[in-house]
Structure formats: C-alpha cells, structure tokens
Length: 359
Image (cartoon, rainbow, N blue to C red; front, side, top):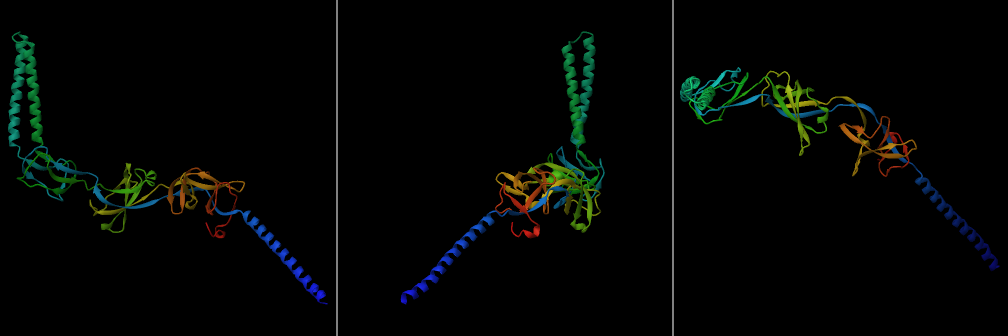
C-alpha cells in the first residue's frame, strides 16, 4: 500500500516539472523573437525638404558719427603769426583766409630774386649778341643761359614761399579746432586748426565676415542717433573695406547720412541697421546641418529608404534656416532630427515632427 501511494504522488510531480521546463523554453524563444524584431526596426527620423527661399539679415551695429572730410590745417613755413581770423564754430568758405604769417623777410628775398632774374635775362641777351658778332664763344652763352634758369627757379621758389605765408580754407566747412593765437611763433608743419565739412557725416561699423558678401556699395541703411531720439534717418553704404580683421573676423563698412538731419554732429553716438539683399536661395532648417572633421554635411534620404552623407557648403544663416550654396538639389529630403546612432547607408523611417521625441 505504501509503494502504490508514493507512485501516485511522483507522477503528478514529474508532469509539473515537464510543463515548467517547456514553459522556460517557450519564454526563451519569445525573448529571442523580440530581439530579432527590435533589430529589424527602422531608424526613426524627421525630414525637411530643401527648397528655394528668401533670406535677408538685419544687423544692428553701434558707431560714432564723423565728418567725411576733415582737414588738419598745418603751416609749410615757420614764422610768427600776425593774423588768426577764425575761431571754433565759425563757418568758412573755400579760399577764405584763415591765418597769415609775417612775410616781410621772404618778400625782401623775393624782391632780390626778381632783380637777379632781370639781370640774368639782360646778360643772356647781351651774350647772344656778342656771340653773333664773334666776340665770345658758344660756351659763354651756355653759361649765361644756365644762370638765367637758376635765377628763374629761385624767383619761383620764393614766390611760392611767400604764398604759403597766407593759409586759406580748402573747402566750405566749419572750424572745429583753433590751436594758435596771433603772435605765436610756430615751427614748420605745426597743426594750427581743424576744418570739417558738416554737410557729409559718416559712421564706421564692424560687420561679420558672413554678412559682408551680401552687402554692396549704395545699399540703403538706417541710422538712429541717440541724441536726436528714436527716429531712424536714411543713409547708404559708401565704402566696404577690402580687408577682414583676422582677430574678430569682421570687416568695416562706411555708412553716410543722406541727408544729414538737423542737429547731427560729428562725434555723436549712433546705431546703424544694415539689411542684406533678399535673393532667392536654396535653404534648409539649420538643424539639418552637421559638422565633423571632414567639414559640413547633411543626411539625404534616397529612393531605397536609406540615407547618404552629402558634403555641403553653407552660407547666410537667419533664425532656424541656413543657405546651402553647394551639395544639395532642390527637392532633396534631409534629416533634421534622429541623428543619434544614424550612419550612411542605414534604412530610416520618416515620421511626423510630433512623433519623434528624441534626436
């Protein structure tokens, strides 16, 4: 009886063990199938289409107004000032006398040179007559001609020096500095005063090297002068300097006020707004542009559902868009999200922007 009872207990236990073993095998098989399904799953990406668009960039740069024409008046002859006719703020006309030097000594030297010239002319004519009569040689006439030329040059030199003793305004303008007074004795090339032309005011601003190629001479600009309020005044670009500063990667642009608003003065602080030309260009979202050691590139979707790497050359950037100058064609679909784990030749599945939660 004991033997039969133990047999009855062992049979159910054995059946339970077999069932448990089968369950484990089925579970292992299920995990293997899940891994295979996960491996075959396509890479999710978000795409955008490369299409023509208009990009224009507005740069707001600070600067200071200055006169387009500014001349430091200096003397070419040393001496004592007898007259200084203008002061700061005086308006002057082109050719108007600004200062005079004492020129008595130079005028006396000029009179002497004039008399010497007259004598040299008489000597030359007389020697020519004597040569025609055979009394002197041709060499004597040649020396007389040389003396005449020297006398003429001396007379011209002193006449010019006398003229330099009076200094006139080079153009219509305003005196901004007066650094001397009558009676001062000044050496040669002394800065006497400064004259500017207030009818043309310009400002110099530094602009990024990425924006410089899109600016042109005569492009419109707007200038805000803080001292005159928030109003924008019209201006235009008159010069774009050819060199880029290697330290800051910026170039200098000169903007002229056209016309000069009432109350504007050289030295005032201003802000310049520059807007690049709006031209049709191939653009993509900035998120599509990638970089590595080989340069800039994007991932482009191919007809077979895989992606390829395409090297590109970018240009102007505005907000979340960037210009592509080379490397893409109109209508190309580029990856903008889903770069993690993405590689060339990989099969991808495009999804809507809201379906992709991680890049």
